[in-house]
Image (tube, rainbow, N blue to C red):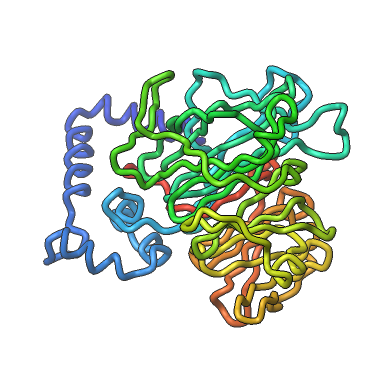
Length: 397
């Protein structure tokens, strides 16, 4: 039907030049219509920026285009690293990873532009030697960017020699600075616009790597990301205070940025853990408070680096950390949260990848009581990582 509609339009305008000119004129007039009659567009935009985007989206096309324009304050949306469920992950030359964005206003999934093709991105998720588990892909969000930091190649070596960075506001990928030691199965996180990579292993275990901590300051105004292979940049990784031991290289760990500190435990899951905290201002390591590590019974994320949330993956309970009492306060419980694998927090929402990986649970933690709903992944895909970042600009909407 779409083809017949298009053919009908083409035939009509071709046979009738006058009608074609009228359509073009009407289109230009539509684009020039004021956002609010009687007001200059810059004043109208200031007024409309106070209205929730979901309301503007449903009113008219000009307001819908406005909320996706670069000049309009961006609302938050969901970004996901997805894997095809219909692909043989064991093939070494097959990259099954794709990047998607879920727009909560239009309730639509869109694929992100592909990463730069040179060098090719070859990641492996599963291997016959590890039938019972997935090989980790580690990505973080920092300074409103999605950053792919670590993964494993088909030769069981680090798949990334430098980070891949997606900027939602420009809709483009770029490269970060080369890592001094590319690694995998590391601790990765961010705090105050600085990216941190700790511990991990390269192609083989190395004590120096397993104890190391490096940082990359995204706020450096003199630095620029390179989007051309081997281009020199002023952005670089800097080594800081190393860990006391290499016991944090046994799993892919989220280093959670919270109140100027990085909080991490030495393994995932519901088992008892060892926890440590890095003070980013003092460049020192300290033991994690007992209550914090005791309640770290699943994936953890911090809202605006101020409030930490954990989902108890065995019980399906969402909790919030109370630093005054050094305990995790129960917020709500749901069977849908059992088996939580990863969470992201931002914009008043906590988003959770649960057992099946094809359903994402969204929790409005600002509402009382907490509201819960489910977002399904695109057909044929399962989620491995999720992030909450500003929406992508779409001037053509």
